[in-house]
Length: 96
Image (cartoon, rainbow, N blue to C red):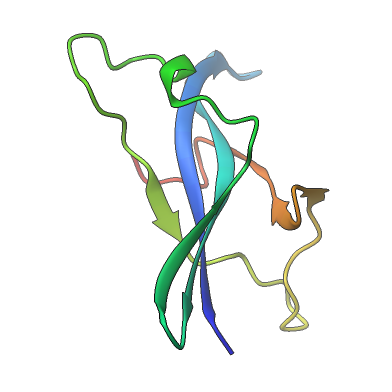
């Protein structure tokens, strides 16, 4: 079985109910490791030019995370999009 990683970018910030600023993150695809090497499946609606916070840079950070597992060993439920599971993450889920 191929190994899978979620591809995640920071797309903004918000203020939570306690007044703390948190990051808003978007799952933009997956990276799979198959028998013939790694490959990416990107959400076709994702536009890297729309990712803010990188003024003066020509690149963005795309982080890789192993998909979450729930207590039963199955992947946690998430909205289905583009043939892969995606989820929006808040600032507590991503360590940057």
